[in-house]
Length: 454
Image 1 (tube, rainbow, N blue to C red):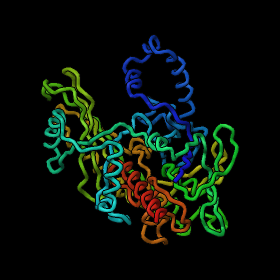
Image 2: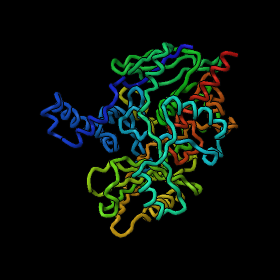
Image 3: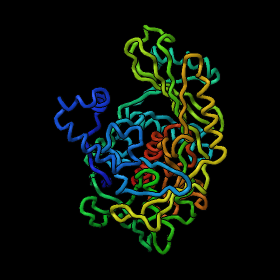
Image 4: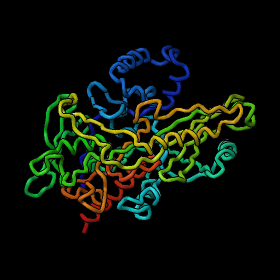
C-alpha cells in the first residue's frame, strides 16, 4: 500500500532542548559564541507581534517558529476566551521540543461510554509503546523521597512513576519504509464527495507558498490534523447531500468539544526540609484519579544541584463531560491567509466543571505545611485552552444517529473516510490523550490492512 502524507507546515530540523536550555541560562551572552543569535532574537521579537496567542503557551519561548502565525490563522472564541495553541510543522505539536511526552493509557473507567474497551485497545497501546520505546520503571531516589513527602498529605492517593521517552519521529519511520511520500506546506482545505459512490473522490489542497489550489486522489482518506483543524476541514467539505459538512447526517459534527479542566501549582520545599544527600535526579510522578468525574495530578521537578530549595510543579488535569452546546463551527465572515473559513469556538465550563476547579485547587493546597509553600494557578486566572488537550468534535459511537464515526474510526456515511485524532474521542479523560490517539490510529490502520488482504 502506498501512502501520500499531506502536511500544512514545513519539515523543520528537530528541536534542540539543549539549545533552549542554554538560551534560558545565558541569555544575551550567547550572542558572543552562537553565530546568528542576534538575528534569531530579532526574528523572535518580530514573531511576538504576530503571535499574541501562541506566545502565551509555556513552550513558545523555547521554539517560537514551531507555532502558527496568529494573524495568518485567525479564529474566534465566542462564549469565553479560549487560547488555541497550534503547530503547523511535520509532526505537529508532538514535535514541539517542550511537549510533555507523558504517554498514559485510558482505562475502562474513562472508556465506559466509548464503543471500544480497554481490553480491545490493549494490543494497540502495546504496539505504540514498543514503537516509541516506552517501558514501565521504578521510582528513583529523589522520587521516593518526594513520594513519601507528598503521600503524607494525600494518604489515599498513591503516586506512580511516569516513563518519559524522547519525542518519536513517526514520519521519519514511515518514510524509511519507502511506501510513504511526504508533501509539506500543503494546506488541506476540504474533501470532495462523489455523489454516486458517496465516497471521498479527492482532497482539495492549497500550496502554502503560492496559494495555488489543486486536488489529490487516493482510495482512502485518513484525517488526523488535530481536533479543531480536522473538524474545520470536515465542516468545510459541503455538498448538496451534506450541507453541514461531509458525512454529518447525525448533526453531531463539531459538537461535544472538550478539553480538560487544568489547574497548576508551584510548590517550594526549603533546602532545610530535604536531605542534602539527594542526587540530581528528575521527578516525574503521577497521581491517578479516584473520583467521577476525576482528575489526575502530575508531580514534576528538575534536577537539584547543591543545597537549594526544591521546586515541584503540580499539574492537575480534570475530566470534562461532553455537552453538545460546546461547539466548533465555521465562521461566516472570517478566513485565514489561504481563504479557508476560520472557526468559531463556542466553549465554556459548566457549573460542575467550575466546581472541579475548586476541588483541584483544594486538593493541591493540602501540601501547604509550615514553610512548604504552594502557589496556585487555575482556569479562573487565565483563558481556557491551557491544558492543550482538545478532543471530541467527531465522536465515535455504536449508533450512527448519535455519532460521526463507527467503532473503527470510519465515517458512518462516507466509507473511505477515517478520522483518528482527538476529535474521535467520546469523553476527555484526565490523562494526556496522545497515546490513545496513536492507539486508535493503529487499530483503524490494522482494520484497513486486514480488510485489504481479505
